[in-house]
Length: 137
Image (cartoon, rainbow, N blue to C red; front, side, top):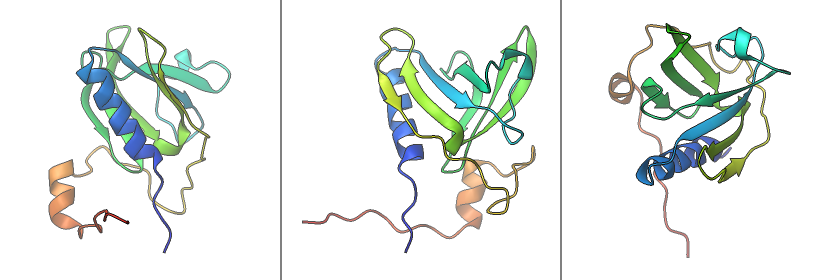
């Protein structure tokens, strides 16, 4: 059995920690053709994005993708980032956070997200539940 990546769980935990402590969470992302971000802000194949609740709408960090809407120069845009493309998550205020290795998204493993994909609640009702963690002594 292949274990799932810890990266999305750590991203969600650090995002929550930032929010709980009134910090602004930022992510640094490696950008390629499978990353949907405003290209005019990409430098050296990387972009840094504010993912705080004041800067985003409908933020979803699932095990494969980070999706949200954000405004750039007043224009609303849909952002879609494969979780494996996240290089770091950190706070604007203190710089605390975590770095990650980049894992390139493989299109043969999953289809790229569509705008009308079901919401988290719809997914939960249509997909079988995954196994839970258990305490190992």
